[in-house]
Image (cartoon, rainbow, N blue to C red; front, top):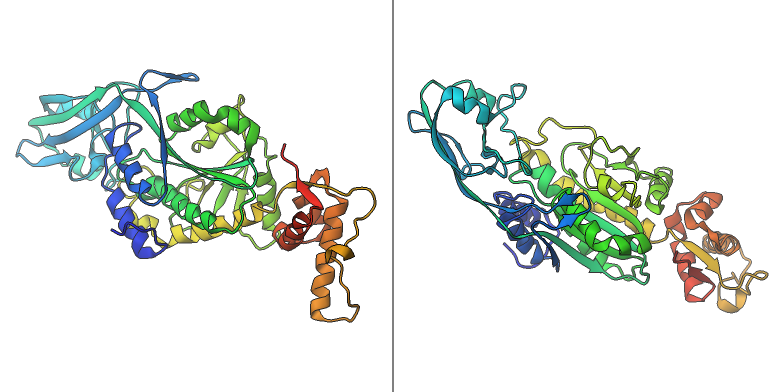
Length: 438
């Protein structure tokens, strides 16, 4: 495995293969091992919150350390074995070493009758129990007799670990890009988001200029986003202009689906609607707390942060979700690279989405002296481009009043906000426009 980041199918395929077998959970060594792997390619700062510490209405649980888990049938065959597939043990199972008959065992088995070949993903983070997950087809074959159940696990005081990396921009105003790490061996639901986040980090890092500061966050789902809010909520309240939770961005669907923020009034919310009129084919759906991911925490009534969620497959649902069928073949590597492309295009447009103030608001500024006014009246294609740019400059100056954002202005011109990038850059360079930082 290369120690240098590469945006290629081979690189992402190998990185996936290294991450996939790790027994991850919301705390513990598997999570930290995964952070260490990502840290080779993105500089991560790890913040930790100790076991037992209150996070709003939640409490950081003890870490779960599990080294062995298997279920042995009467004939000695292993019905479940976490070393074969780590989904086969209920995540956060307590320790057990006992012999049971089949009737006693049934209460500790989990399967999906409607998907007889799939092994389900089951957790019990906040209530002590133990169990095994098997395919319904295998469960139906179990015979009477004595079964040996062994789980070697322990709960220890430790911490909740949250990983972050920040690319500073010209402004303190901040865009949050986050994904979760906490599921064991699942592909689309677990690894697609962090892998796309990694790609976006390297794309955005290469930009010549960044208007906004970009914060990249990896953490366990729910308790991790609450932990990030515990650490950063004052900063977010002051500086966040947009956020995006990235998950389930692999799979067969062609286009991305964006679940909007609760108030549907942030710059990213507005931009996503705007871009549908300018060649972007993503789908927009309304916020709901009934399903989803970490956007529910950011959009809770006490925070109401402008955080959206993007997926390729989650919002429509897919039968492989939370099962062993959510594998590399289903996820695919090419859809991840396509997601990186599509999301970068959106954030390049986001870079031009802002509220500006005209620094010379009394009358029209003298554009000719600043090289911003065409000097030749002869009609040509070049002249047309100059006139189009001049119209953008005039509109930006006229509506650069600290109230209209650039999407409002682009709509008046019938162009995409990204089409005005050159005009905005020139006006900023000449000191005619200044971004308003609320």
